[in-house]
Image (cartoon, rainbow, N blue to C red; front, side, top):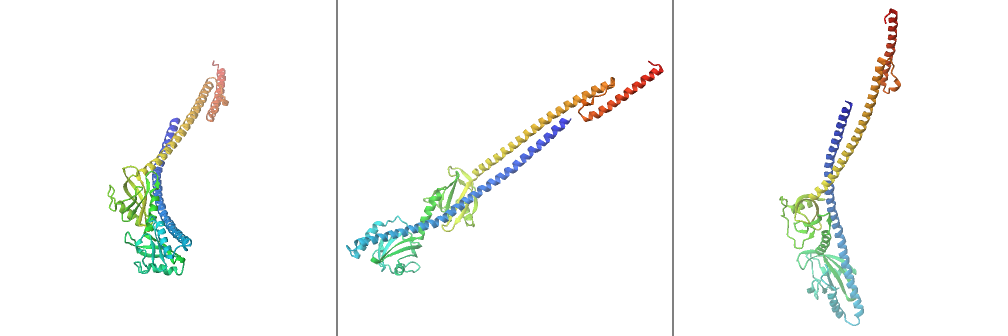
Length: 422
């Protein structure tokens, strides 16, 4: 009976421990799912913000680099003019020198740079202009930008006060006709009454910076399928599926299989300060499979871009499943440990109870044997051989009974002798 009660107790306790482990596993499985989801969402957000920060840094870095290159080019041309003048001033007249300088500048200046190089006299006459040769030989003092500024006259007046300067105008680009801000670097060479300059249209400068930024961004990868994508706010793709788009087609009305207008969702997210998440379906980078995706999108006002990065949900679910499987194995391991402990405890209890029962049976048999002898032979029980206190008390009572029984027998025998009863 005791063994049965003990066994039932062990089974109930074991069931409780296993149930608790299973409950803890289910709770942890939910926590793992939410933790992985939060971590991955935060990661794509930080990756997108990092890309945005890189663009901000690159804007200033490339601007400084290009303007420094332009300034260096102007300085190099000026040193050439100075060296050529000093070498040949006794051999040619100033007019001849200017003609030869024009020819050399024509060779030295190419159109592969984002800036225009020009040489004017300090009286406003154009001597050389590599982007607009039609200006050469023309007095440009009356030339104005669309804001009414006297461009060349301002340059001439400025160089009367200083030897070099940086000026800003608003002129139309020759290839587009669009008015843009123009930055001009000018340096004077007084011995020949001329100055050399270089101009950068800010839109050309911006375009050059954008091209260099996009080249870097197109190479960025996050995991197997992660990449940076960039679109203009009007829906024109610049970097799509990790590649720069050479001949972009506007995607403003593009919808995914569920009807989500993806680019318009990007625009919505880009208008939110700090960006936002969008959910849609998109083709995977290395296959034709269309899969659910979550991306973080942020806007860049300087370039009028929408910058984003995302993760396909099947990858996210695989990561969650892997983490949950780890939790499952931990739960199984815990249950195995609990079962092993319970088995060891049960075996120990079983052996202990058996030993106790055997000793008890031995003591009981010994007690019954002595009890029998005490009743028939009148021998008292030897208490030194009894180890259980419960039986010691009974042995005292039996020994007392044996003593009294012996006394009664002795009295009875005496009475029989007295009465002549044999």
